[in-house]
Amino acid sequence: KAGVTQTPRYLIKTRGQQVTLSCSPISGHRSVSWYQQTPGQGLQFLFEYFSETQRNKGNFPGRFSGRQFSNSRSEMNVSTLELGDSALYLCASSPLAGSWGNEQFFGPGTRLTVL
Amino acid sequence: AQSVAQPEDQVNVAEGNPLTVKCTYSVSGNPYLFWYVQYPNRGLQFLLKYITGDNLVKGSYGFEAEFNKSQTSFHLKKPSALVSDSALYFCAVRDEGNTPLVFGKGTRLSVIA
Image (cartoon, rainbow over all chains, first blue to last red):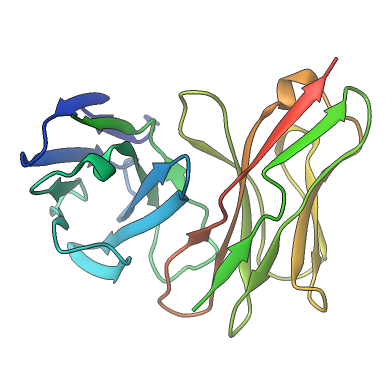
């Protein structure tokens, strides 16, 4: 099975712009989560989606949004980029929501740099 | 809300020696506990998990972890460290119910030859 894929792998934007990141989960996985990884804050939870519904949301401003499509692929959008948004954005998928013991499978991440 | 703490930013150990990476957690119900490892420029890889049952959990690459409910800890261990174990290790916890998976800030493990 192919793993979780994320596109693009690297992105450079300037302040004020917006960006869309894409995540394709492992085939058959219906739950997708997004995390922001920075050296100072570690991994911080952004969103979790299951069957096109947002199930959980982390403590991020409204500039951060996401969605999930019927094929389980997910996108996240960051509007009005700030320098502090520079981070590695990780997507993870798991087979089922509601099975809280399922491990998550991570993609390689998208490295976003905001200048 | 659930939380997890990794008290050590960095752990150094000599190759061949046992290693321990510490993790403590806080949840309101029964915890679901995980360890992940991240190698440079890579995503996270799952190592092991505790859901229920035996307090000693065995995982990938010879790692194991011990669940201690009274101390709310889930320390990662390996009897004999390898240089290739050098990486960033994350502990994570999920509470019962519809709650997100929350990660610690990570512990960087350096195994010195």
